[in-house]
Length: 397
Image (cartoon, rainbow, N blue to C red; front, side, top):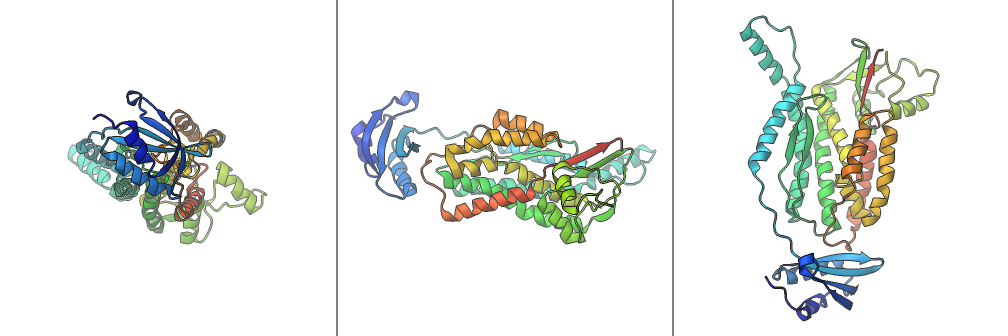
C-alpha cells in the first residue's frame, strides 16, 4: 500500500500536535516521518488514540516519544499481525506438566510389593497421590498466566495462551509457565495492567491455598535425616501465615544462641543460618508447599528487570530511567547468592535476557493516580513475598 504524501500526513498530525519541524524518513528503513513540537491536548492518551485511528487506514503506526523534555511523534509502517499459534502445543505442554507435577508431588506409602501386578498398582496409587499438590500448584500458575492473558485481551494486545514448562524433578515439577506478547502495548498504562494482572491473580489463589495447606500440616522438631536437613525458605508473608495458623514464628529455635530474638531472626531470615536443628517447625502438607511455591513465583516475577512482571511495572513507572536500576538488581542478586547460589543463576539469566524492556507505542502518557496506588501495592507484595533464601539444604549435620 502506498503511503499518502507529506501534506496529508502533516494535516493528520496537526490535529493533535503543534508541529515545529518535520523530518521525512525512508519507509523501507522503518521511518516515514518525525515530528517535533508540542501536543495540543494535555490528554496524551486521547491524542494518541485519535492519531492512531486516523492513520490506521494507511497502514501507519504513530509512536509517541520524549526527546528530553520535548515530545516527538514518529510515523512508522505498521507491523504485520503475528501468525496464529498452534493451540495444540499449549495443550500438549500443559498435559505433560500435569504429569510432571503429579510425579513430583506423589506421596508413596508402604513397601513396594514383590509381584509385578502389585508393583504396578503401587506405582499407580503413588502417582495419583500427587493430585492435591498438582491441582494446587497448577491452579496458582493458571490464575497467574490467565491474569496476563485476559488483561491482554481486554486491552486488545495480542498474546499467546500460556506455555507450561514440564520438569519432572524436585522441588516443583515445573519451570513455570509464560505467555508471549505478540502485540505491542498501546501505552504505559496498558503495559502496567498486563504486568500486574498475573501476580495479583496468582496471589489471590496462592494465599487461600497456603492457608488451607497449613491447616493440614503439623509441627515437629527439625532433625537431620541421613545427615541432611532440607527446608523451604521464609518470606514475611509465609512467616505471617505460619504465625496465623500456629501462633508462633517458625522455625521456633530451642534457644537464640546468646543473641536477642530480633538479631536472631534478622540473621536467619537473610542468611538461613544458623542451622535450626532442634527447632520446632511446620512440616508442610503438599498443598501448603504449593501455596508457598505460589508466593515464590510471585516474588520472582516481580523482580524489577527486563520483561518480568516487575520489569513491566518499573518501566511503566520510570520509562527508560528504569534501566539505571538494572546493575543494582544484578549486584543484589549476586550478593544474595552467597547464601543461596540459585540467585547466581538468576543474576546470569537477567544479565543475559533482562536488559530488554517491552516498550509501548505511546511512551508519553503516564500512569494515572489509581495505577500509582497499585504500583505501591506491587512493591509491598514484592517485599512480603520475597524470600532471601528460598531453599536451605544442610549436609553433613
